[in-house]
Structures are given as structure tokens and as C-alpha cells.
Image (cartoon, rainbow over all chains, first blue to last red; front, top):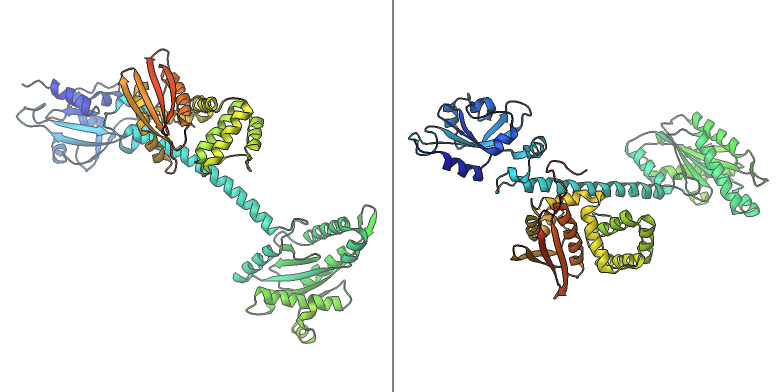
Length: 342
Length: 195
């Protein structure tokens, strides 16, 4: 009988997580790294298949089966908790006993991808791995990449916050907090693209210039802010209100196809605009003219066409003596040329 | 210079001296922002302007500031992740010294556009080494001195460090190991990932 100790000493350095099996599949020697993950077990004399299950390639757990799959990559799992997954490879030992137990086998094991949990579960240190094992480098990379990823995530969320703020600014009229022309174009194009119905109400303030000239810009700004508040009050959350010029506003009323409803909204709005506003003890009196058009009125409309129709209606309202609302109809196009709308 | 390096300077100032001092630094250096972003790149000159401003505001020589940054990077709890990454370099302080040869490559593996200086360790005797530090501009060597000082503490080793100055763009640091276990160092648990 040849002494097996030199073989065990060799394995200790080269592959500390190994098991040497005899011809019946019992463990005759376990590497210290294997012992470390099951410190309470006396592995010597145990059946290898009682310690770990070879999941792939499929086999019946016998020593014969192990010989059949020698040299192939094994996927194993410890039988008791924590059921750590292992990778491994088995080599058979010669029958004549010249190397290790005759007819036995050596199984070398490693953690593979489960190394992260294994290090935590078994409190492993650098000394528990073979000198050539890349486990430490892998742990280093996981931590380094996680740290780098966290920094990237911080940057991403900061950039996203900045982007939202910039977009809000780019779409908002800073004096009134209403949407601006750009936002309006965006909303209208979106609605038309998805063939949603809506009503477009173009409102132009009357006598605003007089207030601005006689009572100053501060009064003018105050009036515009009050107008914005009234418009928000008189519409629903889903509607869009934009200030498109000095005293010009466009309201997009979502899903509206009934001309009578538009008339009601416009009348109510104008009535509220005509209620005198007080700024620093001075009374500011304005009114508003409005022209409207329904997206459902014509087929194949585009934004420019709709705005033009609403302009025509607004012009008609101005001609009718201001402080009123006119809905667009084809007759308006015959009576008034476009150039007069400004 | 990579944002991470600028961010390290910023965190050092803020964590050690507070936000107000950092604000003074940014004003003195003429920064148009108050925070460096770790994952962006900045003009190299900016880094040196900030360092000069830090030295001026703190009334400390730049080399001392650099060395203190090195100490901060290893010992402050806010940057614990970095200490852990460095500790992966080896089980003993001597192992760690040798791992510095790979520092540049290790950093690049984690963040591909992070260029750290090239370090090379020479062993003269088993307790006397010299470390060369090659970077486009001198100064990094002082950060390394601080870093080594703090890492030696971390490993529980007693060392004498001496920055020998720069020649041809290469800074030389002499390292004398007095003892490798003069006190109990801080523990390093492989599985305890720093938050």
C-alpha cells in the first residue's frame, strides 16, 4: 500500500476544496477549504453523494455514475442548508493503487458564481482560496463595479432632475405659470396625431393696453396673473391653457365636440374677465373677445389651419363689438381676409 | 481630470472642514458650480486650481493638503468603499505594497476612463522598498504617501515614509517597514460589502 499523504499535501496547495473518494464513493480525505464550509461534519467515512448532489450531468449518485462523468464539468449542490451551488470536476484514480485509493476518485470543487454569497455565509478569507483562484479578483470587481454603478446612478438622477426642470421652463410662461407657445404646439400636434377631439378657444383681452399704459406694467402683470387664475378656474385639469402673446391666450378643451358647451365656457369666462380687478387700490377693467373652432368640424386638419380658423372667429368677435365669443364657420372665411386678424 | 479625482478633493474638504470652507474654495478657484460630478470629466487645470485654492483657504502647503487627501481616502467612513477596494490588494501590508503595481489596471477595470498614475514597487531589502509614481504632473506622490500611511495603520504595520521629490516627472517614495504587526489593524471581512 502506497502512502497517500504526499498526494494529499499536493492537493492541499493546488486545490484546497477537494475530496478524495475510495472505490465505494466514501470520502477518505477532504481538503481544508471543503471542511471549512461544513465545520460540524466529520466528512471522513461519509458517502460523497450524501454531502453533495451532482445535479448535472444527470446521474444516479453511484460511484459508477461518477466514473462515467469524470472529466466533465459538474454542477453540484450541498445537501443541507445553506444549499450552496458548486462547480466541480472529478478524475478517476488508477485501479492498481499507484496513486491514491485504488479505483477511487478526486473531486475538485469551486464556488463559481455563488462565491459572493459563499464568502458571506462561510466567512471566507483570501487564505481560503487557492493562490490561482480568481475569486478575490471577482469580489473586487463586483464591489468596484457596484460602487461605480452607484455613482452613475447618482449622476443619472441628477441629470434627469435637471432635464425636467429645463423642460418645465421651456414650456412655461414664467409670468403666469401657464403653458407657452411651444408647449401649445406640442399639445396640439399630439392631439391631432392621435385623432383626439378638442375645442380650441382663442382669447384676446380687451382694454388691456389701456390698463398697462395708464396704471403701469405692475398693474398689467397683475391683471395677466388674475386672468390666468380665472382661466384655470373655468377649465378642467386636463385642459391646456397657454399664453401665446402679450394679452393673447389659447385654451385647448379636451374631448369637446359640442359647440353649445364651448359657447357656455366662453361666456362664463368673458363674464368673469369683466369683473373689475383691484390692484393697489386702483380698479382695472378689462374684457375679452374669443374665437373658437372644433377639431371635429373639419377632416384632415393641421395645427396651422385650426389656429387660422380660431383667429378668424376671434376677429369676427372683435368686429362685433368685443366682449363676446364667435364660433368658427365657413362663412367667416368669405367675409374676412386673413390679413385683418392681427 | 476624471470627476472621481475632483470629487475626492471636494469630499475631503467638505467632510473634514465643512461646507462653508468648500464654498470659499469654489469661489476662490472660480468654479461655476458647487459640486463635482464623479462620473464626468473635467479640464485638468481645474483640478490644480481647486487644489491651490484649498491650500490657500486652509493656509496649508499644497503637499500637506495632498497627503491629507490620501489619509482621508482610506480612513474616513464616508469613503469606506475605497478602503475595502484597496484591501483586496493583499492579506498583509507587504502584499498590499506589491498590489500597487496593478493599481492603475485595477482602477481601469472598474471605471474604464479613470487614469491613475503608474506605480512601481522596488524591493531593496525585505523591509526597505521604493515606490515610483509616474503621472503627467507631479503631486500624486504626496497623495500616495498619505494613502500608504493610512493603509499601514489599517493593516497594523509600522512604516516610515519619505517623499524623495520628483525627477523627470517621476516621484519616488521610500518605504521602510519597521514592523508589520505593531498594533491590531482594522479587520477586513471579504463578505461585508461597504454600503
